[in-house]
Length: 106
Image (cartoon, rainbow, N blue to C red; front, side):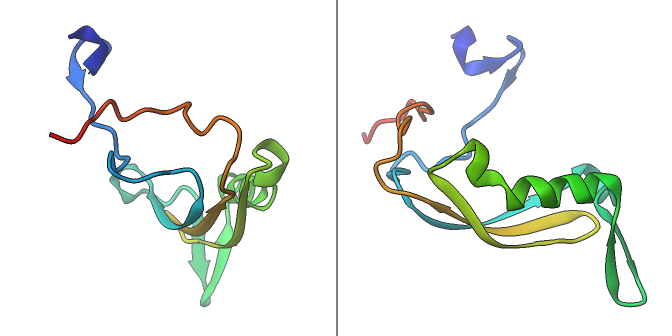
């Protein structure tokens, strides 16, 4: 089925656990850059110095509730080639069914 393929070529499986209710909870996430490139900045003398992209990422993490009132990121750290964050999603948020895994228990 073409709906299951990206640009009718590639099969992209959802990274979401089809058996988990994403209606609320706390999640630890890690986001890595492609090929581990240092997009977010560099460590100089033991201190993380953010690039413009790193500064933008920090701003977005700090203000996530502005765009997504049901979400909060109380703690995050930005490294040269990856980001770690705690993401808290409120239970009962609007739009809880906007993303589907299209999976069922067999």
